Image 1 (cartoon, rainbow, N blue to C red):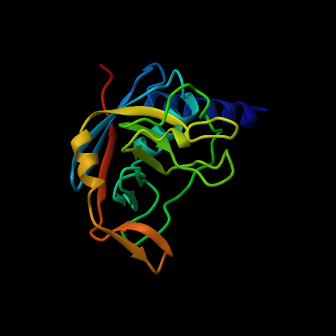
Image 2: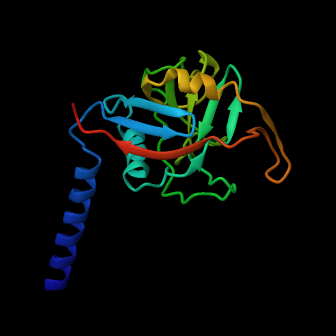
Image 3: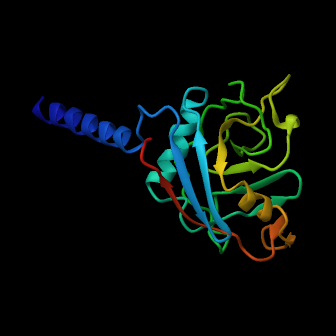
Amino acid sequence: MRIFSTLLLFLSLTCHAKDAEIDPDNLFPQVKLETSMGVIIVELDRIRAPLTVNNFLTYVISGEYNNTIFHRIVPEFIVQGGGYTQDFEVKKIHKTIVNESGNGLKNELGTIAMAKENHPHSANRQFFFNIADNSNLDPGRRWGYAVFGAIIEGQEVVDAMALVATKYNEEMDWEDVPIKPIMLIKASLLPAI
């Protein structure tokens, strides 16, 4: 019984420590993304996308977005990253999350959303910036892509990313890969304001 009580106490402290790190009382946390092309600051919306925001912040706090690449640039559409190293090694995935695309936030210019596969609840760590109004990514008769925040500084950085030259990457069998890698050097949670 004593071992069980100790284990419960440990798990409780671990969960509370993790919650403290992601600042659960801040409804609109801000994250600074230092990239090889400049700084982007996003404000996240925990009211409308609590699961998605907490998931994103878990990767930020653990440093797992650091030294990743923006691997997919589609002009007048999206800039996507967060999942691969410069050598295209897959970064660790914690879990997939419930799709919060029905939260009322739209895939509009300057927003940040979660990438996913065909299955609606397959988003995990990859995210993208909308560099146009992409209403085709919003939910309707099908699941959409969950928007969970917006760029509040550095839109010009994302706009510049959207203009870089891309190519087909034979090794990965991907289109739209930047010829010169764009790095996400460091992601950090800013102090609450």
